[in-house]
Image (cartoon, helix red, strand yellow):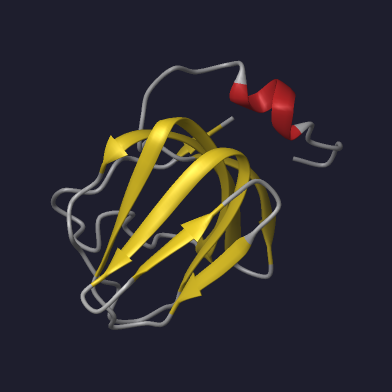
Length: 117
């Protein structure tokens, strides 16, 4: 990964939903793109915040007490330990930043495998 990564191009290389692709690594953090559609399940990350940047589409981040709506170019960080559920309206493209090895589902047993794009 010592060449520039074009996010739009990387997003054309797969169709799977809720299956992030690592496009770069920065200080032991994976920079990832993902396609989302529909609701994901409720989960939390006990050891890290959860960073979302919407590239295309509209994404709701449901929290137990409110819903955050994100449009293209908007960022939201779910604090560690806070239950949340992403809900994508149509196909949504996002950029994620997480410590390498963080399970996207909050549980290693149900997490999508890390794939380098």
